[in-house]
Image 1 (cartoon, rainbow, N blue to C red):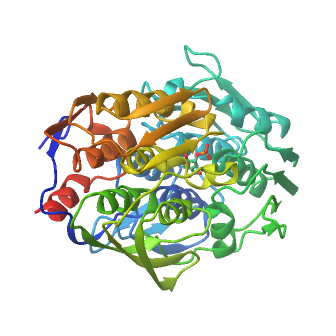
Image 2: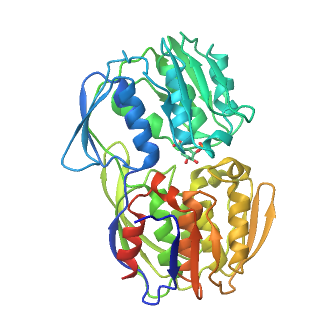
Image 3: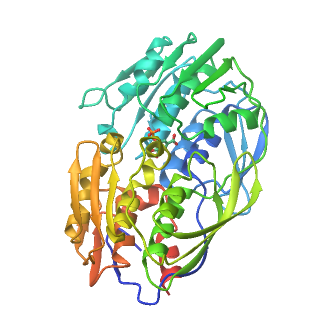
Length: 435
Ligand code: S3P
């Protein structure tokens, strides 16, 4: 079934049931990249088999890693190249994934061969200078060959790099990780300073695989020491809290809902969405069930008795950056104002998520004021269904389908195929929870 156009109606019976959201996208990319350079074989469980992460896994196979399928598509054995990858025989397709391209650039820049990465129209319009600049300070030779200046395709002439200290101009886990991955392959100490805490999956995976990694007490300074050896070690990837976020919001706003999300990653650099929703009045209960480099748990959500608007703090933005479209939907159902500022990074995601979120909120009858760096939503008025574009952005598509579950009439999202980049089982989970 094509999921390019999806229509939902008000979920009259509430959302009910238990689902297991798929593996974490950020962790999956990193596991593929580090596993491909590791010495030995490791069992990977719960890899995200979405287009984005499969592109990264295929890229790593082009570099010589091998994948032996396990009992399900998301479980496999990954054998690395012991830091001896081979030059890719053809250009690397990164599809829609900024994470894949930016992280792989850090690795490819430090390897002794040439490579070229390209992506779809959305990825080809996203800024790559943010990783080219710090990597160039290390001596990397990366040319942005896109029609738009500073954009993909990226042509990389790999060479030996020198270590740097880099002060990140923006709070970006992708930029931080690109530098640290290059640093891992470079003799000496490479360090970064980030203006605020961003997701720390790279640091945690470095620790898991025995790559040197020091993090300052405040979490803002991170260093690694190369050339590192990566020791293969089995890993279980947690469920993606960014995928869980859609259901956290939908179950909070749709009357008569009671759902459980199993095996969700609860890394504290990713859980700001839970903190913010709770602050707004959401009824969310968590039980941490295990720890495998990252904490995991089950989350139960019931309809909130009352949701109220809130002000998102600047320091919270990087830790819920991907959840902002669906958080804006929650805000439209909450009484009073929700202010989301200091979030200009949203303009350079898979779509300009400030304008696409604002357009769609307005299409459903919500009151919202747009700013260069965010939006202020005045919630509480009922929303009505509409036909909306998802602008080929998976999180806009899923976020506004959630809005449709609590809006009058029919809500149709066009150009939704990109849901497959992060959440291939989304439609099945939607059907399970509303039936
Ligand atoms: C990611 C970091 C975030 C996020 C993206 C995944 C990562 O981007 O939006 O979906 O895996 O490092 P930035 O770090 O560029 O904000």
